[in-house]
Image (tube, rainbow, N blue to C red; front, side, top):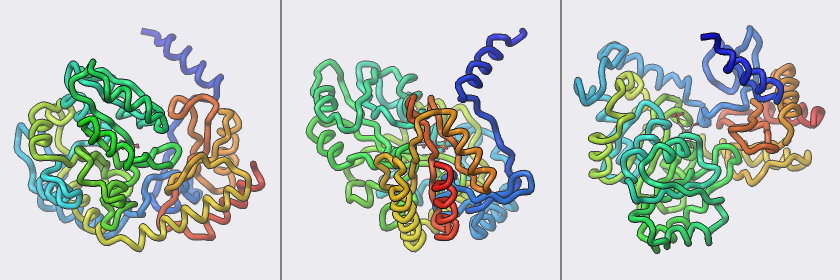
Length: 383
Ligand SMILES: Cc1ncc(COP(=O)(O)O)c(C=O)c1O
């Protein structure tokens, strides 16, 4: 095969300034990283609490590697669950105040697992238009129907929930939207789910660790955790590890263990990852100081960007977009920032809607005011 059809499509992407390429990083993830022997200040990672290279987590992983080796050798249903996985699930269930939890290789697979197995033919999945790709792809591959709403369209949501066309209804939302950095109206969604006896599934990928007194997420911060039927989150962002998880009633978790193909037919995560995640969760539970610093950094940068006249959408979190619009202009800005020592990636369609390309700035608790100020100074010159 010549793959001409692929080359043509790649060419097309280049013409539209939508071609993506990988950049090699040769250091641990912190507020700075090394690329081609140059230090860059990193403003686009999800390492919100700076735990990805935390020495306590590394020590926990090393200790587990000494005991259990590195690979996990098979799927958990085939050759047994190594103890750190079980211990981690107990810890996560306790933190989320749910009966049980289950860990998956990634957050993507956690979303796939839920929506491919729990909603069934004749059911309806309701998605926010800006839900993450893993939620959208999961809904597409479910036997249930799915419909999308924009988060302010409560009348549309309500009409769909009231429809007698479907058996069960599932509302799936992110708590913090990954590209705009704004919050879902969880209070309103809880109200609606109660009124129509629907199931509320909340993906806390960007809130886990960062919100709530113990880092359990936005629902916890708002006192709504008991009303959320199924919580999904990832261990790959604020926890600085890898893997996704679901926390819910025990029957939901048992069902996933029995039916979720992305759980059943894949090799378990390395035990050292779970041991590291246990350590990360323990740190997160007591990381109120980091959460406070993260919020201070976010409020500080948002205020400075607004003063510069930047469009930061409705951001209220550590994710702050600077909407540029044009793909080429966004790429150019990202490239110029890079030359000046800042790594801020250009986010373009299809990750965001056409005409809304942006610099997606994400903050870490350990960014210094000086680092944030220097980014703002560069942006003031470039924008
Ligand atoms: C909202 C949301 N859900 C799920 C995921 C997937 O998580 P993971 O990186 O663990 O696959 C992401 C990651 O970007 C995300 O932003």
